[in-house]
Image 1: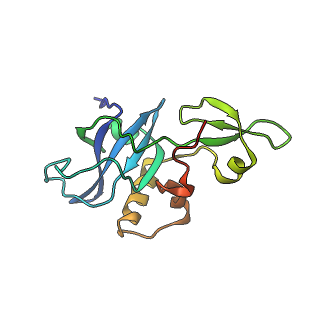
Image 2: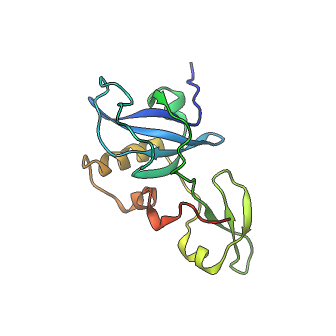
Length: 165
């Protein structure tokens, strides 16, 4: 049976046999989610989420397919209301043959024409596989090599959070 999930759910992401990371579903998209991953390693047998857990300061923020959630590989271990400190990123998307770009939100809505500075600083929308997401979380926690591909998954990359519309 497929697992149902919702925005705000806290999920455990297995890293090794007895090690997990915690993440929160920030946005529920078609068959993807925007996932905020928090620092630290936890035991699956510990009380989850721990009482000192804060969902305000993620270390990674990225879009990934929801297959690991739906199949129960990433288990729902709690729920917190929407975090006011995490603003879904905006992206640039090409909009014409003359190099024009528009601003697009996480849901795929086109907002407006991008400025020159935004074209330089924003990235194109991208989704990562659950396997790559797990590898990035392992690498962030010192459990594997950090690859350049993970750079765009960093929560503070280029400080795009809070870009004005």
